[in-house]
Length: 99
Image (cartoon, rainbow, N blue to C red):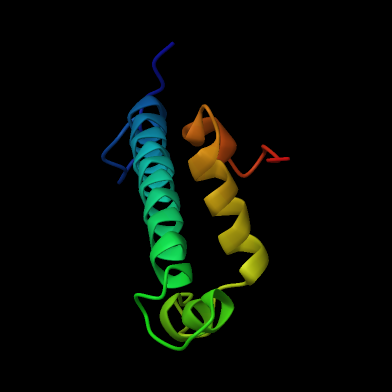
């Protein structure tokens, strides 16, 4: 079913839905990439490559939210767990819990 755009609008709702899904997919893909890089970083920091700093300390200094504050360790650990999961994309979904 195709909906007609309202006056002044450029795209149909189906087009807008497609764009939303494309952005969400890109977001999911980027979250998986971040998870894999976090896993690598943790292994390297714990291996001593970062010098005399703990993994938690390294995260607080280097892994930030958009507002510049450190990202929560809970979120970071969830992403790392997802990177080790058989299906990282499913594991990084906000609706999925990694155990």
